[in-house]
Amino acid sequence: MTSTPTVAVVGLGAVGSMALMALAKRGIAAVGFEQFGIGNDRGASGGETRMFRTSYVEGPEYVPLIMRARELWLELEEQSGMRLFHQSGHLTIGDPDSDLVKKVLHAAEVNGLTYDVWDAATAAEKYPQVRVRPGEVVIFDRWGGLLRTHHSIVAATRIAESLDAEIHPWTEVTEIRPGDDGVTLVAGGVSRRFDHVLVATGPWITKLKPEWPVKVGRTEQHWFAVTGEFDYSPDVLPPILRGREPGYVGEQKAYDSSVGSMPGPDGNSVKFGLVRDHSAAGDASIDDFERHVSGQNIRKVEAKILDNLNGVYPSAIRADAFFEGFVVDNQPLIGPIDDMPGVSVLAGFSGHGFKLAPYFGELGADLATGVELSEIAVRIFSPRRFDRAGVDA
Ligand SMILES: Cc1cc2nc3c(=O)[nH]c(=O)nc-3n(C[C@H](O)[C@H](O)[C@H](O)COP(=O)(O)OP(=O)(O)OC[C@H]3O[C@@H](n4cnc5c(N)ncnc54)[C@H](O)[C@@H]3O)c2cc1C
Image (cartoon, rainbow, N blue to C red; front, top):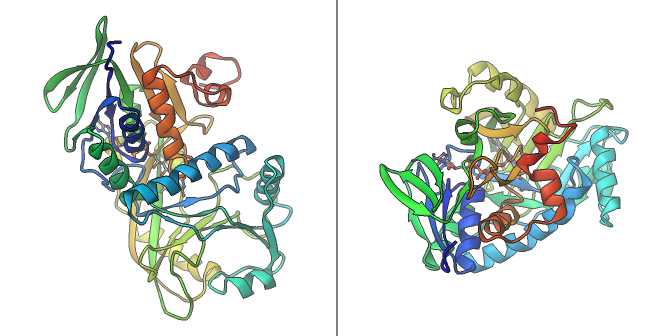
């Protein structure tokens, strides 16, 4: 590497934009390439909002990383002067014997966090917007909240630009060629050489590395108008993750929650997701995916909305589908790509990516500048795990 390393970031979604910002803050000459516009809604970060929660069914080892990400989110909001993080908390709802509830409470205990746990009547008093069924419990995570996706990407990119990072929107990278003297990128038909390249292409990683065990998953989201009886502003109503159907106590995998809902940024709508269909992804390419949501699926969601929320008109005012890269073990891919010297990957976030994006961005800057990653980051995230026994690649 020369004395002034140059680093390219391919893909400026949540994680690429945060990596670009982290590099620029370290004084690295960083160049970002994005095939669409900055803050676009076509990738895994589309759809206006994401949940931030420390209540993590996905595993207690994530909680300290999420707490670090939280500090970085607050810093980003302050530095950018933009509204990015509504700190309303987070609600997990489920049967007290369900895997979801037990795992969330276990992760909190391991990490020394204490949540409020309410019965249905107490929860209904605190959040009349939410329909809690008798026998369910509600876990309130006070560190949670709602993140605004497109604005966050714009905020990180603007900060990177203000620190002299170079940004190329609407510029697709079509070739990444490692060589003896750095890595050559072909972007928008022009070749350029870099000391290091970070590939942060979200679900498009399946194009660069079709041999990796990553599937493109499709998730539908549906927006409903609120009718004014209750306060749905994003600073008041927390995002909600509800377990599988009432009474379900079997294993709950992280991504088969039956319902996620969160208020719209305008306080006048609510987003509701029911259909998660990544099993249907098969081996199809990201280019084949359908963003259109069928009338049949919209009606399925409309039939469920009033079982979950009060003060909502049960007709979807908008429905859209978004894509994410899911790795076979549901863990992100972060680390050097062994057969591409000078190239590292930050992709396939398997549903973890938005809340942790500023933390993952820092890992990207570490990778590009030769800083050793923590033991946990190597163990859980490295693409080398597919070479180790026990991961079904
Ligand atoms: C519907 C849905 C709901 C989710 N809910 C949550 C949640 O509540 N909380 C949470 O933490 N996470 C959630 N996730 C996961 C999270 O949103 C993603 O993990 C995260 O947004 C991934 O960001 P990314 O930067 O890796 O990918 P992306 O946002 O897809 O960014 C990749 C970018 O790379 C660009 N690109 C690709 N190829 C090229 C190329 N060759 N040249 C140039 N540019 C290229 C793309 O255009 C894109 O902008 C959810 C995901 C989905 C889909």
